Length: 490
Image 1 (cartoon, rainbow, N blue to C red):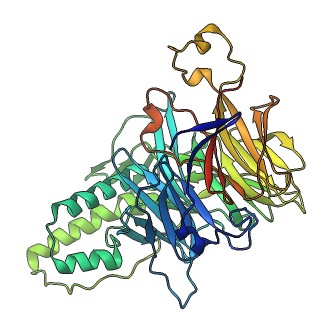
Image 2: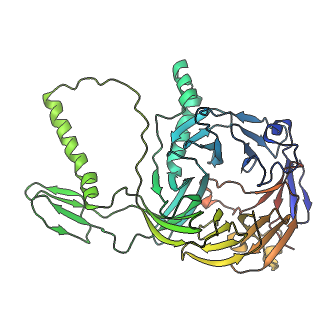
Image 3: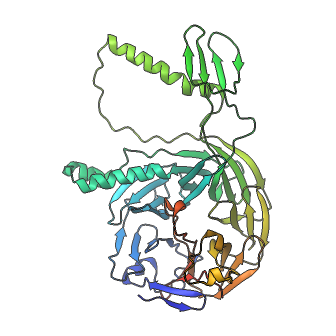
């Protein structure tokens, strides 16, 4: 379909089809955020996923002839399990759809509808699936790409590299066709549930259950973190060393030296009914106490030695092969940083800027708070935007120099400025404001049944060249038309 531009919007395609009737299409305002039946949407560069309580529909918006796929996950009817979150996971040559359920299961499906992975994260409803990346910090020489699972009072983090490896392995095994009918049946029934993805999980309900949350990025460790520990088994001395000593064991003195901690710390922002905004420092370690260090460093070596010695004396008898029960992972440490309580104000939705340094938070009083996630300070407030939906985007604002106007010049990241797109459905308008304290640069009238969308983060895109700016799309549920907000302002 050819692109048509209407001043500030460019039409890209249409999703209207008979399959949308199952999701309420045909009724006025069926896609509106305040619709009676909640419809979930996830946008990709060429595809759109729409879900209700039990079905996910994948359709292409750029090509009307692209085949549509319906996915019906196996949900528990006894516990009234339903779909509560969806999101795309996009890598270089792999694209799958991730589904979160009301029982706390994370499911991953291929574009053909094959179940790839099924894993319990924690008991409770998965509210949100967030995919984001943090660019490499020149001071710490680290970067991060992850999938954040948000549940009431709980945040879990899956590393993007672990998910990539699992998906690559699954697709390679699928294409090789080296399994028999039984293994195919096991894959369809249980997915890749035996190969659990490693993840960290934190309890963040100190100030009440959260309705939305996000890991904003990597943060420095506490000032008083214990970097080096020396434990003397035959003495009572505890000495801190600021040296490069590695983990070692001296037989004469029976001393264990634990090297410098290499764990990461993350900053998480949560919003909820009791506390509008809360912030936490998330530690990778499940225990930071002295006992925890001893158990994590000494006990594995001890048990390994005992096991090796026992094999020399007794023959190891075969153990029965039974499928172990899925155990929930224990919580890592989450330390409170700050909290904002302002009754009767309640937090509703949260969105992050690409760098994670800004967060836009909507509340129950019709206000939008712009939070600096590093200083943990509200730097701007908009009023009169009830039921608003926000996304950060990048636009070419006030770029009228010769280089920007040249047809041979490809805009880079420095040519764009960060803006916030606000969809106010009660007003029927979309406004774009320049960050952090800039003016309103754009206002667009929109129909009642519209929804603001943004493509999911693509893993590995931190080093993309040429630079791809952050865009915002508008989906009209009544007409099925998908448009993109122009990033050029005349």
